[in-house]
Amino acid sequence: MIAWREGRVTALGRAWPGARELIARVADADLRVLAYPELVGEPRVGDRILLNVGAQALGLGTGGYAFAVALPDRLPDDPPPGPGHIVKARYTPLQTIVLGADEQDSPHHGILKNADSLDGMPVVVADLHSAVPAVCAAIRHDRPGTRVAYVMTDGGALPLWFSRSVAGLRAHGWLCGSVTVGQAFGGDLEAVTLHTGLLAAKLILGADVAVVTQGPGNLGTGTKWGFSGVACGEAVNAAATLGGRPVGVLRVSEADARNRHRGLSHHSLTAYGRVALAPAELALPDEPGAFWDTVRAHAEPLAERHRLRTVPAADLDEALAASPVALSTMGRGLGEDRAGFLAAACAGRLAVATPAAQAG
Image 1 (cartoon, rainbow, N blue to C red):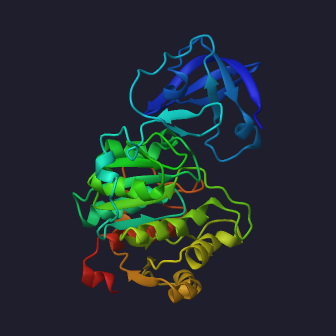
Image 2: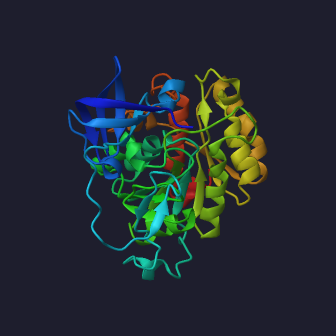
């Protein structure tokens, strides 16, 4: 349920495409707030503001924000009339109407109407949103000029605008565009399903590689099946169904305090081992040492369905260090949890490797 507060905007902070930070005074406290101007309008100092503070009160991993629900004394103008009748965040008070690339009024409808193949396009699939910059870093390092599109599913944040990483990668030319699918919204293109989202990435954005993850805010319960990352397996199936080349990021950590995520996460074992019914290539760094030996041993059961690929990790630290956006997973940076980022980078390297190298 929603924990409501009313406050007053006292200061504006940094902004990036689709999002604005601000400070709101509520009773005797200053709250850090995130507003999405396309939903609530552009906030100004002095505005009365209605807030949802539920996640902040619980200390959830949303960046410590309260969220702006409305600026009730200065409502934004109605959007101009135009095409688009796809409703996302459906039947919630902030449902939004977008133009889907695949709907009849879209200029791209003719391209997607009978589209049915990715023609072997690599599709890199990851559990965590934090893998995206690492995957892109390896691709850019190995194959400069590769057009990489980000396809965001709806297991985490619904507005793509929440992601500073995607905004930064887009600004630096590391992504050629984004597609938000399912209930997610805010991408350069909108699509109803992951399948049309992948087709849109290739046929409309002209991507050479697609990277698929949920938005920020992975949800887990500590149970075998109760985590949003099960969608990794579904993404593998979608890519394979459309004739793409699925490449899986293994979720790995050498610093997570939770045993179920230390080494090879149980998320990867369930998503790839049980949910993914089609084969994928799963990247394993060729790193030496007991930690990586254990990861490889725990990954062996996945070889019953998938192809485990040993990927050279040489010079990927240099590639990761060149990321234009901060590398952070569960609050840990590259120096604190190198293994997770290295595993993601190896998947990016595998996606653009030559056929001879893929056989490794």
